[in-house]
Image (cartoon, rainbow, N blue to C red; front, side, top):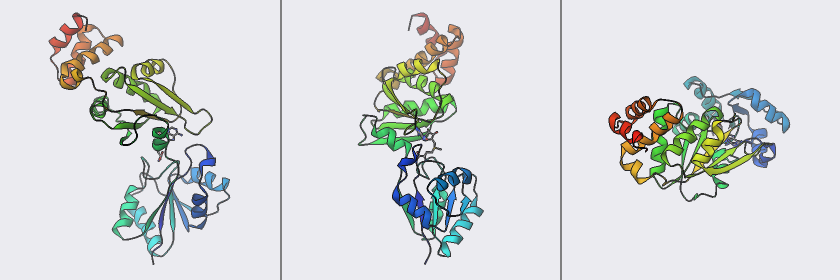
Length: 277
Ligand code: SAM
């Protein structure tokens, strides 16, 4: 009989969110496979759990997966944890789970907190259907394309974003749908938890000047793309150009850059800016 791979959720800040079952499973497993063993050892120590740890992280290759599955095949139970939240959700886990599935090794979830679910639950937006975008792309073009697409669908959307990039992401959202409601959920379950609600433009402006810290989830409803911007690339280009001009570019340079990024005609964008668009 093979052992079981347990996928164990751990707190995203507040240690009181650890479940009784997580403590028991971590205690009873033969080994805890951890994204960062130093982080996990602190958690285990807090709950007086003495199970040995091994590392399993984003760069663990097939060799590590083979080691874990060998343990499981030998009948040992393995508990997989990440630094915080649910393993496999923007965290290592998926490849190991897939390997176990392929080998008919039982995989059992031990659900715990996840930042995405916590943020959605307090968003007040429709959560009957939602779309998780993971971490937003770092490349400007890819991020804007994804945000635009997110607004063209009806599902509520949620994404993880790094603190030093969140102002830019909000500015991109504001360009697409300035009055669209957004929730910025920061430091959930922690001492400085903050739920900031406002329009994309309000939040973008508030954050443009501030130094943002901590961990962040952004949530916004779908369906916000203005018809004009959705259907007419030049409307999107003009909105972008306006922003570049606000950022300090000349009208000509702002028009050229926005046109290049959207495929709209440079002269059209330039003319629209001159006309007061
Ligand atoms: N597996 C985790 C989960 O289930 O929530 C997510 C891991 S992902 C590497 C880390 C990102 O999740 C952070 O950059 C942040 O966007 C979000 N996050 C994690 N903890 C958070 C918290 N306490 N408050 C807000 N966002 C959080």
